[in-house]
Length: 204
Ligand SMILES: Cc1cc2nc3c(=O)[nH]c(=O)nc-3n(C[C@H](O)[C@H](O)[C@H](O)COP(=O)(O)O)c2cc1C
Image (cartoon, rainbow, N blue to C red; front, side, top):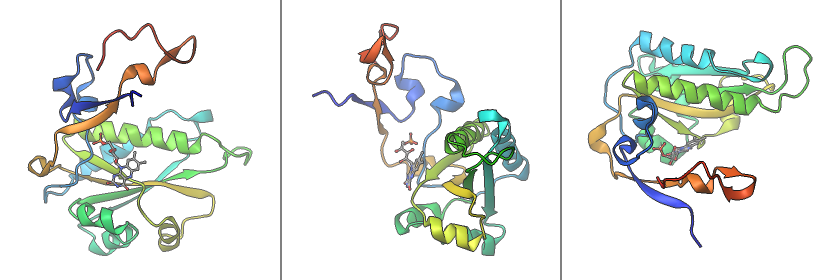
């Protein structure tokens, strides 16, 4: 059976016939970063991008902890929560960011079932902003959540979402130009579940 996966060139702008915003097309998850700090104004711009994200009831449930190599003790604290395999490459990133989602609404303390969704959207905006500033972001789910909450005294109300490695990508360290992506006709349906939308004519 067709897996729906296709090989796409690393620089997807070169290989797709469907126009994309440049920052989306140039985004990738590097495992190598240059030894260059992220400028403070760029750092602020990343969080400003997250700040303007949409959220259910405008709750803005996301929170972030940021650590840079310029404060080695703090950097080491956040770094220590990563899995060994993530540590092996993320040590090159000048900046680490942990994202959290608040599980209940401020106004009535009811469960916010889109808190993690909204936080993911904010991280997506942060990531695209990073690319437009020449940076790249590699998101990680591989870390010790319990240790993260313990080390930073995170209130029970907040759930870790991801840790992000941020910096200027080492393009030379790119191991492969091949990436796997689902074809649009395996993810966009019309009329009934599973029937590819007629609006999609070309294969990516
Ligand atoms: C929530 C989330 C968790 C991820 N966790 C890890 C991780 O722990 N380690 C890792 O090397 N990559 C991780 N990734 C990166 C994905 O593997 C990567 O985004 C995917 O392979 C697609 O590659 P691309 O981002 O270069 O397009 C994660 C990505 C997301 C969104």
